[in-house]
Image (tube, rainbow, N blue to C red; front, side, top):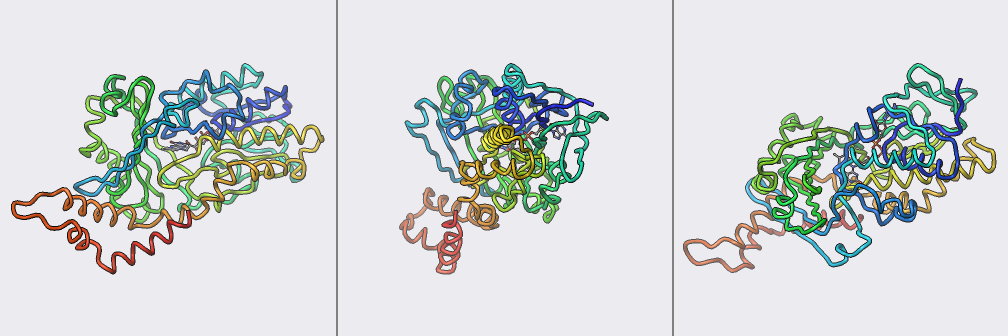
Length: 427
Ligand SMILES: Cc1cc2nc3c(=O)[nH]c(=O)nc-3n(C[C@H](O)[C@H](O)[C@H](O)COP(=O)(O)OP(=O)(O)OC[C@H]3O[C@@H](n4cnc5c(N)ncnc54)[C@H](O)[C@@H]3O)c2cc1C
């Protein structure tokens, strides 16, 4: 029977961050990944914010396979027949160190795995962790590929549905309201086409989010991120919305998104080179499970660390940071020779002091506030109608702008907007 100091289940960003940090400090670590290689089974819209995590991995990202740094932000409300768009670009986004980048996980995770291996981590691909080994109430290893592998600590990094966290008693069975389905395509076009269509130069990139008709007025949205010579395009739909509304056929939703006039020109002539679907944790702080137990820790999506506040969707840097913090907690526990729940409880303290749990707590209300049907159906149509009238020039005389807007904003409507804004003020 083989024994390791630390066994990590899952070589996504959380697992690799834990492995990299542990191996850098000379700890013997085995990473088990069910995919053919790290990144083979990982899905992300593909936008990573490096500011909160640069300090955790000094110098590491200088050589990373990052696609483009994002200098143009866009957000569109899509109505049935029109779209209203808000754009942002600022000088700070062009200055180094850049805030955020587009990445392709199949490249990035593979590269990160090589960095962890170069520090001494052992990685086994095509090996699924089937179960945890529990003795006297304590996790002492895993069953993988029919073999029993023992470790002082097991770090669960198996992603969003994390059956292993359930088995370890760190969380209960998933509730549909805490998850969304993401479907994503990588569409290859030339670098020149990306630059020209999105108004970019050099390695500049653009990120654009869409809400409204993209999910037929239901909870969710769409995104496009520019890569060097491709775009990552996708839709995200709440699982509750999918269960309640039969007309929401997920593959058809991404097809009709691609056919929208606002989108079709951006991907014209492109070839879909990657198509994937995956769940996203959307429950925020209240859906975070127990983070550690006897001989076990959970990090990344497996712990529920992801945050959607409408304008940003984040999970990758929480996975990287929590993996690193899990490793730091293990290193402290190792010093004290105590891998019990008490020895590992420092993990929670580290997370509490970090941006991970502070962000999730600051935006605790976000899932409830965002899950408002008026944001996805009513407002895109209403704001679209106002813009149509504002920009419209009829055959006869044009109405005063004040009257044009007032006609759409009755007292009842203004009251409803006020109530919605009260909700928004909570995030
Ligand atoms: C469509 C979509 C768009 C997204 N967009 C963004 C975005 O733009 N920005 C952002 O920051 N986040 C985004 N996210 C969220 C982000 O991708 C996740 O939060 C992040 O990938 C979590 O990393 P992780 O390491 O915890 O899990 P994962 O990356 O899912 O890694 C888990 C790993 O564990 C392996 N595994 C699973 N079970 C086992 C097992 N039993 N044995 C061995 N290995 C196992 C898997 O193969 C996988 O490699 C998006 C997610 C989706 C689905």
